[in-house]
Length: 265
Image 1 (cartoon, rainbow, N blue to C red):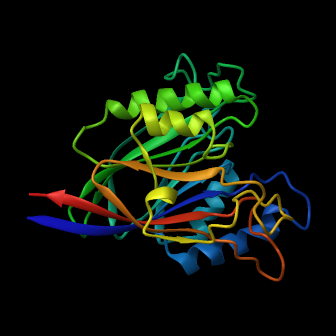
Image 2: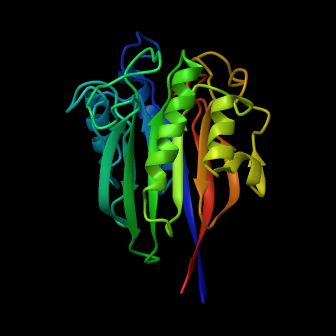
């Protein structure tokens, strides 16, 4: 007997709170709230949020719980926060690792990375469908392809140690496009699939995902991805390019995939 379940998964770089008006966090947070509440994702992997932003999101989105850790430890540095609908999911376990030669060492770096990079992962139990799966969320380096490729290899290694029969969903800002070595590392070495390519329906496939607060085309390519492995089908994927009165909620457009998980019994 097979059960087919649907999950709406969002990847969204929120942009940290360092910008001045008109792109300050105070001016953008309501726009992000409106966008997320419009799209109603079940799970969100966010990048770049600092602790005050994480707490703001908690208040703005009371229907979600979250798990995360600052990349420099505790509340310090950017978070790879995972938000999940509190009325649907329970966290069975979670952890964090750093994209370096010493992945258990908080704040560690390697491979020419411009700054600290990490990943947060959770194993979620879906109370509606009784399905269990993993969600990994990351943000790869913006300067070094070597750091991105090695970060990809580390994520592959870490996720290979998960319970092998459970699906894995991977969200992130990968800071490189799909034609890159980093992307091919996930696809070829990690046996991940890219929702963008296996989706039955693609919405806004002419767009990139980095708008830089000014480019409605989303720039030169899709640097935010939702990947997966295991028994998962992608029903649709969309770049959400909403602007409110000409204002961008973030310097990235969010990406949303509607996934179908099969559970055999």
